[in-house]
Image (cartoon, rainbow, N blue to C red; front, top):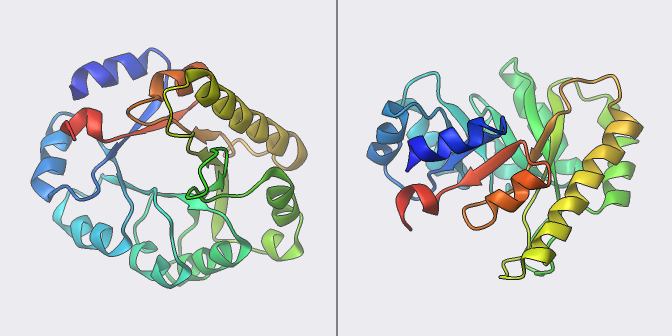
Length: 215
């Protein structure tokens, strides 16, 4: 399945984050052998345990809800954190990144879905955060784009509307805060059930697990 999926994504220059949460290292190694390098986890300690068991060129993407107290487990090696939704979390990522002499790319997570269980910023909240002196003083984080999860529904028009909204948030923030920053370039949206719609609406990075593993 991986080869077919990669071929499909290459046509649109969309990056694949293979979601390997709860899967053993052997499963990740099998995807690695097929050429996959980006892997997504949602538990900091699980990611930290897997990291030394896999090759050094693996890109580790943290895609779950992240508590500030757990940043220390992934700060030494994480390639990107997709789920930043507060100034306090950014400050802790910046602090831990500085300890390791790193700059950690982060995505601002927006709540675009109707479900109350979903986390994320709204546009005014993100604009307020980016306008703070406290944010501008951080030297060890890079805001690389935005992330969001659509409502879990069979209503494709609803999903499309939510992805389109996230793309609009990205464009607004780029115009207001990142006009001269080529590093602000990622729109992480789309999972196994809706990635095709996400790509049509401008996703640059999809997070797919069940399609690869069958569950």
